[in-house]
Image 1 (cartoon, one colour):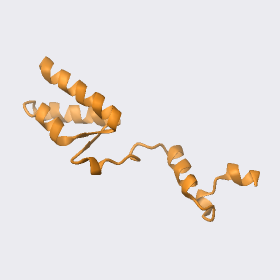
Image 2: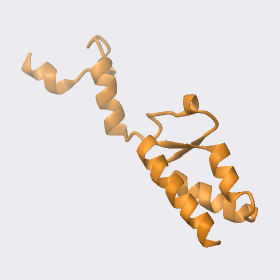
Image 3: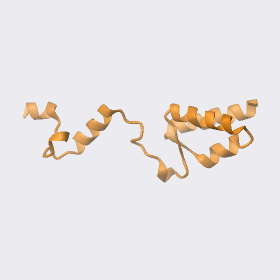
Length: 95
């Protein structure tokens, strides 16, 4: 891989870490001349960095990489407390 492509991928990855995503059109423009296996390797690497590759910013899923514990906390914060699966036991004990 040439140095220019490496630098462009680094810049795109940095932007992707800040935003959580990169546009597939931007990535494809940078890696279009690489072999398909190399293109896939780069896409996989970005996903491992928890950078989503999306068609449009609307396709970005801010919850895609949540851990189970993080997801439970979000659901508990949204719960009215009536659904047992989402009851926050820590606050219930204090009541």
